[in-house]
Length: 398
Image (cartoon, rainbow, N blue to C red; front, top):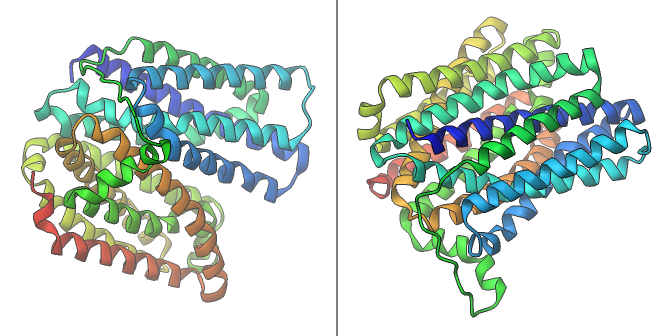
């Protein structure tokens, strides 16, 4: 935790994450000014996820040929240069095409798609084995704090200085992130893989690693179920829940998001405080918190009392954080340095695709059956995930 490289990683990643939020907020503001179309605005998160999905699919080719630090640095440099180009053409008003802006969104997301698994895989290399829980907890707290403040601050900045100036601010954050990434020293020696077979074999490598190991496969299946279930927390579904079930104004949508993120931060603090106890009981934490989240989600979906919904969603955030830390730590302690980035690449790629498709499906089902039924479906999926974790508990021993 006192490693300078770990410090450079979390500061650099925080700047990059905050920049990602600011640039999306700024672009949405610019696109709305150009089109005033909600459909066009919806294309931004869609192509953002689609870019990450495509990038995640081809990332094994890069992970076999380049060190993690190289991928992190060049990804961030490329994002910074692209954003500089976008900022320049926005500043001199030579861009009015929505298609051009969407292409920028896709390309930047594509570059970020291999940086995410590289960053996650770098973390356990920069701390000792007995500090992985603390490192994951600290990273999670920082990420949730950035998420909690980033969207709110981004909205305020857009209101005061406009979308174009927010893009320029993002450029500064990306530049800081790039500098920080260059200062990281990876102690793990890189061995370039000389692939004699077809590239299609390399693309399947992450999948083969997951399916050949019972623990990786079980963690992967839990991730799939949880990703689909977590779609209920997207803005469109929560917005409908607030209006139709709670009978509150749009402000309560913000309160629910804030309560969830505060819960995540509190969960990280709890984990940090009891890190040693938590580390000795990772398997039981994963299983028990899965059941707790299932029950709380079910109750939240049936709640019609506004203030009580904030209470439940805050606790969901706490246990969600603890569960994610347990899952990440089990994987990081079990996988080799060569396996880990490829596993994360598959998770990131499929997770993006599942989330995008499930968002459309849940949105459609909420119109047919009502939003409360969607939360019940989510709770059932979480229950299935918890039962599977309990049945396969022996696979999570490390």
